[in-house]
Length: 103
Image (tube, rainbow, N blue to C red):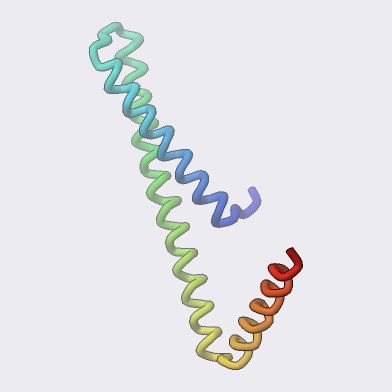
């Protein structure tokens, strides 16, 4: 599987949170159902919901760790190469200024 971008990961986390929330609401709404099939389904749903929450926490932790690592790497680079960092920032500013002025 290809590596996901940070934006895709954040979207996946948000989508998974929504699914978990909906599933929990469904479980609350069907709490009064006592048929054998409903009880079996509720049990399976609770197990899968628990697994989804665990995966969500793992994914969220991985995203957070990657963001922190990228921030540390950028900070280290700026400290190791201050003048190159200033030049890169100035270059990006000039390019953005040119793009804005063309409108």
